[in-house]
Length: 221
Image (tube, rainbow, N blue to C red):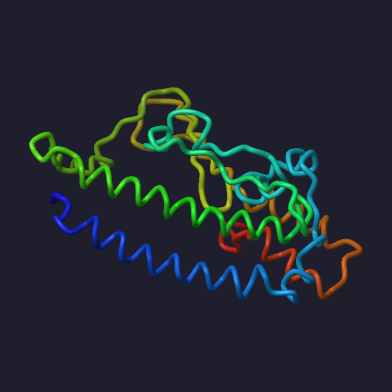
């Protein structure tokens, strides 16, 4: 590993400015576009209780007004040091909580929040005393010699589409676990999607599908 370059802050600010300019275009061309509004507002509404009952997580859950984000529930990386608060849909002037428009807005605002966090981290790196910096090399991979003790372990992480959970079970001391279970968000998103399209207009199905943002590869796995 190498130390951060001296111009990291300037380069970061310059590149983020380009992204922010593009976001202004998206705001004007998409979210303020009457056609986009007509095709997403009031479409595919998922109320908060329904979202929770279906096991929905991530931006789709927060688009229904539920303030839950694993990154804000405890020790998760450096998020607590940045005062991280999740983006949650609130009642708007033109849209309903839980509709396709609200879910799209949540994802858009999460990009803006990410930009602010990157700016803050870049500033921390820039202002950190040079004499206190220490670059630690990455440990060498030792998976081939890793021996699992009998027992079970559970972990979870916040991903772009929601929460991913991992369960590992080892029945004896071995480099290979007896069982590994991965619970991902897409099956839940597809389940609610199949419910939402019942009785919906064919023309509304693409907006509903894109707004819940399930991953086909995740479903296939």
